[in-house]
Amino acid sequence: MISDVTRAGWSDIYALFRGRALAQSDAIAIEWAGRDWTYGRLLERVNRLAAALLQRGVAPGDRIAILAHNRAEYVELQLAAAGIGAIVACLNWRLTVPELKHCIELVSPKLGVVEPDLRASFEAVSDIPLLEIGADWEEAIKAAAPDRRIGTLVQEPEAGLTILYTSGTTGLPKGALISHRAHIARTLVFAAQLALDPADAFIAWAPMFHMASTDHALATLLRGGTVVMIDGLQPREINAALSRHRVGWLVMMPGAIEVFIAERRANPVPIKGVRVVGAMADLVPPHQIAELTSLLNAPYLNSFGATETGLPPATACLIPPGVVPERLSKRPSAFCEVRLVDPEGREVPDGTPGEVAVRGPTLFSGYWEAEETNRNDFRDGLFHMGDLFRRNPDGTVDFVDRAKYLIKTGGENVYPAEIERVLLAHPRVSDAAVVKAHDARWGESPVAFVSVHGDEPAEEELKQICRAELAGYKIPREFRIVRFEDFPRSTSGKIQRHVLENWLAKEGCERPSGQAAVTVCSDPC
Picture 1 (cartoon, rainbow, N blue to C red):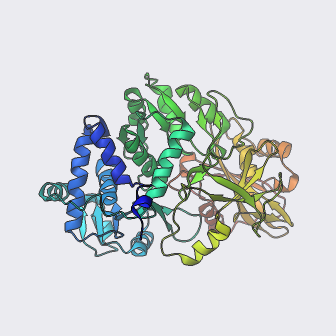
Picture 2: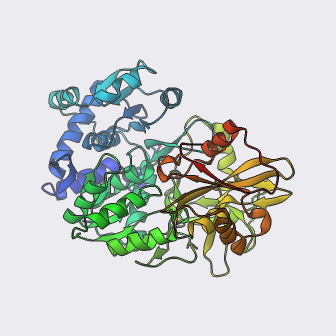
């Protein structure tokens, strides 16, 4: 039984949002599709929607699965669920039928929420009751009677609020449960780590089923800023929003930066200001970082985080505007304990790759219905992320690679990210990914997929830049030129190496050991 003293020491997302809405009811909370939602209007709609959900039998702890693009109703649902203790499972509308079926069945939702255009996709894999956004949604809100239970049903900080599905590199998606505690902590860490102002706006263009948009949209509303909802990467709309709002963190991911730079070049409209831009600097060509930050006069966020952790564990370094970074060392985040450990859980010495293991208030509450995975990943009281870093004498850390993705060539360990960083430093390279391929002599060897600006670099040029920075066994045996837009990516913009491996496997490609070549892939290989 939780005592009143203990209960007074924490709050929940709905209560904090309600307090903010009452304090600034006329301020703009959401801007979407040419319309504005004031905080007062949003609170009224959220309360009515929460009552409608209760009338449909949704109880605390029940899951509501939403299949929709970015729109104001997405946030309304998350806040309404917060008011009654329900959990919103944020489905990826890009999934294949088997993947979507898996994600829905995994969480056993009591209710589904769908856009009209996505209803058929949902009904093809599930027969649960649906509430359709549009006329049905508005009628439900209009008809709902006030319910005094709203705001009283969340009984502990660990109560779940959202389930965000991890993209992963192999296998089916896992559902990461994010609690009220974690969402509130992420709000605080966002503001403290990035020095955000309460009024700073956020442009939610990345899918709301992604951590960046859901975390930061909720955080912005708790602080009192405006959330600008944009359905996907629309550079012109994002550019226009920057002319209307001062933005705290402008999310820019690998795969999006190049097209946004092109928009800013073509339409350099005056902007209100950006405090910090970007993410995942290790996956972005350094010259793109310099150009993007110059165009916006804002530093680049040299971040490392995950759906499971939020902004931490290593997001305390900014790259100044206009600088081509020579190194991408990161400083561990405040409010997060970070250790680098070996497979036995022992901390490794400086200079030795170790898996990141973290503990802190922004951490998720585990994977839904995955006891064995949780036992493994949450061992020794820490969450083991599966990413390798190397600690420097000055306390900064350098990303090495995914612990589970290692190329073993002739007994030597090769980390693909090390090769990718060398290739990305080339001024004509717009993106690069290195994968493993079978090698008759060495067992495995690296193959590089590269997209370029302008003239394609010759084989010898690519080999030379690798030879200058890497040991001979790390040099890719083959370089494949692909179009930038053909790189297969996760929802966070990361290139999916397993898909590239499948491209190679379909070809049955196996060159003699040591022979390198430049191969042009006009269509995915």
